[in-house]
Length: 181
Image (cartoon, helix red, strand yellow):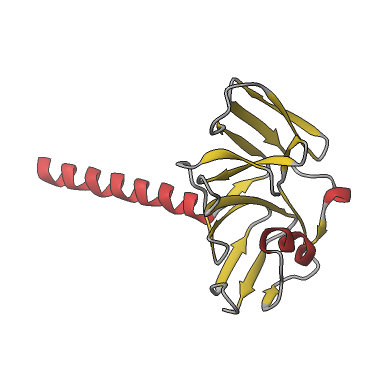
């Protein structure tokens, strides 16, 4: 009897861990986006702005919260997604009337901060959609095929080398300062 209880507890724990992992992999972060972490190579203080919301980097530690963007900040899904990919050739949307916006955290002088690896080979892009929508892309040029099932609210999209796109967030990445974006 004791072994049976132990086995049931082990199975329950495994199912719980798998459920938590699968939720994180979905990429959907809900209607409120809470971001925080260390900004690589920064020990000072900076102000971060986006869509009229201000956050702060204090002694290199970044904290920013944003809820549902106002309708006037949303664009059609194709134009909003282009800001992540920079091109939409071969891309289709399950609902072309969906509206969206991608997150861009300004710190001034043309710079921003990005949740990424040093050198930006891997980065997480945060993307808000006003309804569930699937974005499909055929393999074209140097971009791999993908299918991203975005849910209403904020979603995390991992891009690697600008050619691979998957849903999910990467807790292990730092916040990097980008002068190019």
